[in-house]
Image (cartoon, rainbow, N blue to C red):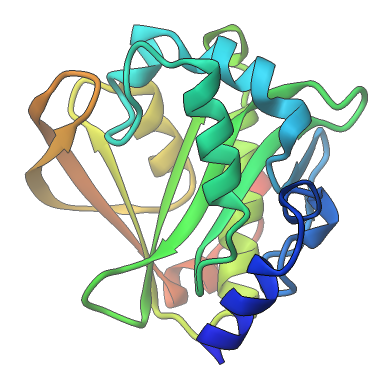
Length: 211
């Protein structure tokens, strides 16, 4: 099945592969009060490269290079639309005008099929406005409602106070510390590991109470 999906994708033109409506059925478009989360596409490249080319952003995202160029953004959009099994990548946009704010996503845990890992980033002009929490809530709800998983993991740099606040607002519990590689910094950085289990998610009466 996987090879058939890959062959089908390779038969399409590059432009058709990047259409936002080609988000796989297990990665549906997500709507929240202020946001639309959908597949990244070519029209996002300029805004993506502008917002990501910021050391304050890149040094907090393990796999984001710095400087971040338009070519990096185009490569990211292309990879995001390849349809990797179990992985969802979203552009975070404003409902009212489609403004690109950043990205978020889910990917399978390397060694545990019952666990997904969540990641997200926003451009600096959109920090401290609740957008990251709103996007994370929508992504987590989708994951637990549509996937046969038990856990969602999240990691953040120990210095990333804003990301830690988002993680805690979503009900994640601290599990431990470790080290991950940082492309922007060219070395290893200390991170904190958090986990949200299905039982805890189900026990939350509403996301609104966690804000």
